[in-house]
Amino acid sequence: MRWSCKCCNFSSPNQRTLIVHYKLKHCHQARNCPLPCVYADCVCSFRTESSLKKHLTRDHSQARSKQVTARLNCELCNFSETCSDSQYFAHLKIHIHNKETVKCPYKECRFQSSVYSTFRAHKSKKHHLCTVDNFRENLYQTFIQGTLNSESTNFETHSDDLDLTDYFIEDLDLHDLLQHKVASLLLRMQTHLHVSKTTTQEIIDELCSISSVVEEYTPKIIESVLINHNCAVNSAVTAAITEIVKKVNPLSFLSKDGPFGSEYKRETFYKKNFKVIEPIEYVLDTSSRRKFVYIPVLKVLTELLNRSDVIDKVLETGHIERVEHLSQYKTYRDGLYYKDNILLSSKDLSIALGLYIDDFEVCNPLGTSKKKHKICAVYWVISNLPIRYRSSVQSIYLACLCHSNDVKKYGYGAILEPLIKDLEVLEQQGLYVQKLGTTVRGTVLYVSADNLGAHSLAGFHENFNVDKFCRFCLASRQDIDIHEVKERVFPLRTVESHKQDLLELKRHQFVSVNGVKSDCVLDRLSHFHTVQGFPPDFMHDLFEGIVPRELSLCIKSLISKRYFTIDELNSIIESFPFKFTDKTNRPNPISKSFASKNLLVGIATKTGHY
Image (cartoon, rainbow, N blue to C red; front, side, top):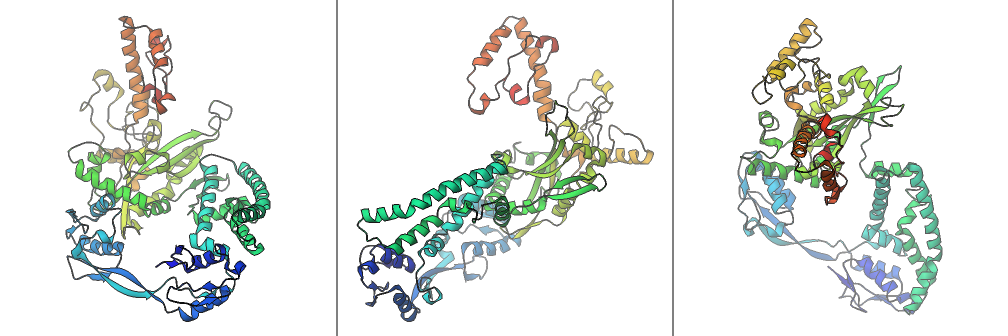
């Protein structure tokens, strides 16, 4: 329903908007003109706003509007109720859980399924913009239902004077929107742009100074605009507009009295409005005050799965990969380890997590503080996401931070204990996802790490000069000198053989058995095992291992045959028109001494461009 002005063509769906229009646009009070009733069939008019509001409350409080709703029917049962499309799909979910095949309710769609994740993925992909109006005609019937008009506001609950500032802020939700926008900008400055708290506060203080200058000249500017448009200048109207401009000014939030005036106020707002999940500090040793921090994986995962953009991508990926890629090897889902995992390969939706562990230096790795402040970090990612999202930094989440020296001293068992407990809950009990209305279970599918980190966490020898140095097979150093390294030459490690090695290790108190020094703490999980859960280190094995050596031998051979010289090759590398991000990964010029070393020096991203 729209309310129309009796003096011009203005109309609005809100009564209060029309009254503000009367007051500002036509200046009825300034011209001493009566205010007409907002109802078209009412001839009453009033001298003051308070009289008009009392009239609306007294004579038009019972006004009704007609609202069109729909009664939705189910093809599989006697369900027939007035409900939204989301409530209707919740009903269809019951049939799917009963192993019934449900047809898509939308027009000209022949899709049907008995798997809820597949059904939801289809709706998200094909009908995400559809409404009840797009349902097949036999599934719904419209009828008229009398409801109280939401615009018939009881003005007695408000003050006698109309507060223009409150009207604009409440009606448009502009206040909250601007507040969240400013808060988001300040938070990104610190987290993404790495602006320090001190610098952020200095920027805020300068912006407040600029805002105070603007506020000083605002009344004069408003009066000038009113005069230029032949409007009567009223001090009350000017003051009201000035107050509105002040409140919708984003810089007003940065004042000392505003919600972002200090670091404490900003952090309080972040925690209250942005669902901040704070890290938990654990003490390893009270005497030496050794600690580590852990960000609860279950809490973060729950928040993510209840976001529509995340859960839709998870459901969509599961449907596409299971249906379209049955005869192709395109993702981890096509491998034997995934298919042998009872939890992850089931028809019900399950979450596959990928862990990543690595050390990094906080200080200069070549200086006097080398290894003193070295940090071990554990990250995780939802592997169900499509590859293009899974590989972005925004999709990788931190789980744990600790000193690398503490890992060596106290072991992974103490550091990863809270993470293991959360993962056990995820495996056994699962998480309730409100968006799906069901509980979803999951587990760790793989752990990505360099060879040193993988062997350290998995319990293998970290020295690769030992006899049994491989975590995938039982090849010895003597064997690789005699036999060619290729598939099916050396016996592979299996779950059974690894368990036997651990039994021998504990029974005889050996230092190691077949390269195994200890068990892996992740083996506490029911659906993860060390032998299957640590994939090869692709970057170090290939791009910083085999590939540079093979390339050096090939280039050395081509130069010896006089196809080109080293200077000609370096000139081509230097002039090659690399595009976009490849420009930063341009290969380094090849040293003239590379032939003696049989190795090209460079990092993995540059080696791949040769």
